[in-house]
Image 1 (cartoon, rainbow, N blue to C red):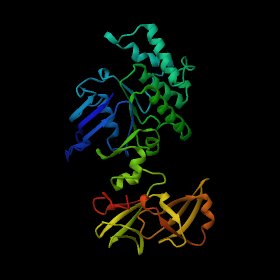
Image 2 (image 1 turned 30 degrees about the vertical axis):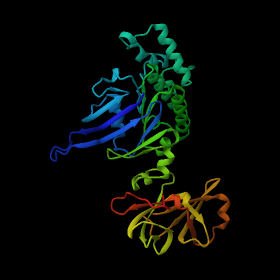
Image 3 (image 1 turned 45 degrees about the horizontal axis):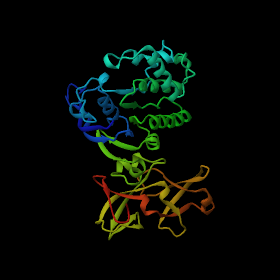
Image 4 (image 1 turned 45 degrees about the vertical axis):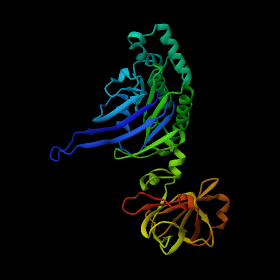
Length: 368
């Protein structure tokens, strides 16, 4: 099911009676979610991603704009008639019911042409339980399950009605790191097997990038960039997106372009063809640094962290806008590190220029 959001806006009344200023949670959001894809809505807390999800579900009414499922305008359609399955952050399982009863509950409330026989409901419950691999837990209650198992029950319950759209609101935030990894892989597997259009809300960029077909990056209710995860990482539209994606995060420096050459401090680090003379923010991905005894960029060495196959060089530079710089190099190159300083050359395609005032991307033929 294709989902189309047209100029979607949500405004909440002010909590401050004195100022009376309204809060714009989602601002003129326009985006088409292709049929059968898993889309990650990504951004920091308060960016409007959950509000967008709840407007798609029908739990919140837009202040403006329209929502289409396929060719059908569902903006005014009630949640129960939209054909959605919704998984909440806290799972929202009924504690007094067994796993089977929790999964059956939405089916028992179907009416009219959608009403099912008892035998069909039980068969459907077992079908989705097998899909999420909890078919051996059907007689347990939520208190007898681990966090990951409760999450699977919540997904099974959402899938039981065979929804047109599956909506997941921060579904992994209550799980430990190992279980998060396992469960996000399961979510991707389930989505692939069912082919249901899925919207996944998270503030964790690693989660979104690892399982999404496309990511939508938001900030303060405004859409910042849409694209395939790797494409957005490799080609950020602005400084916010560049900073938000990546672990370790991107290193940001104050730089100057003069005579089509990029300077960081006194060092001429890269050509910047077609860029006018100006002050810029320079974003350098950790993997952009190449150990080079003759390299143009010198940093003061703080520490070397061994991470198995990679090594993280922790260093500083007067032009850095971050307290520290992290450079990721191959562990085999560690032997070349010596002394109190380290010199680098840079991979041009991993270096990004941004306007100093508007923080928008400045593109050149070489620094992409």
